[in-house]
Length: 197
Image 1: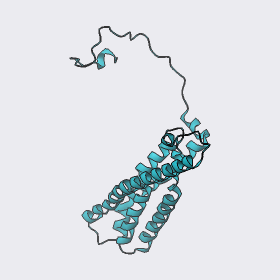
Image 2 (image 1 turned 120 degrees about the horizontal axis):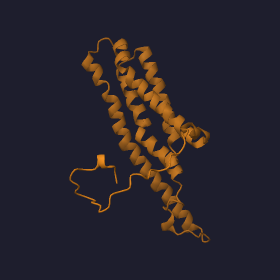
Image 3 (image 1 turned 30 degrees about the vertical axis):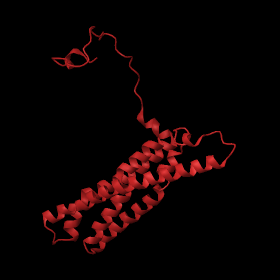
Image 4 (image 1 turned 60 degrees about the vertical axis):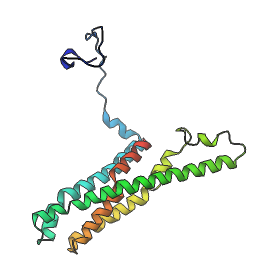
């Protein structure tokens, strides 16, 4: 139970007959160094990967107004603000499309594993046990397409920078924003990274 200062005045749920002993405090542990996580190669890989994706996202988002005003001086402040919709649209498309793609990958690997179990007469695993956590290769199902998406993401980012430097039509950088945000789809990356860890 919380200390007396954090309790509700009129408790409606979870009334307790006895007052908790607040004198017993949990033992204090020493300072836990978070940088020790970098000693694990898989954690370091996931953190570096997500750091690259987030840094590009914030670099593009923070500089849209200044770069677009400089490259396309005919844009009003309102029109420049509307250019942010391309990022949001790409993220929405990425959330839906990448979610469906991940579901398809999951089902594809599940079907392949069931076929392998049914084809092997010496297998001790039943087909319905394929989806259990200890048997299913979730990393393969979630991360198999990551190199392809990250490659597309990198190409879209490079193309975005080139379009702004060359001053091509405003449609070019906006379409590349949509593609890069669709390919990065932070929720997909985070979910995949979480499953990997």
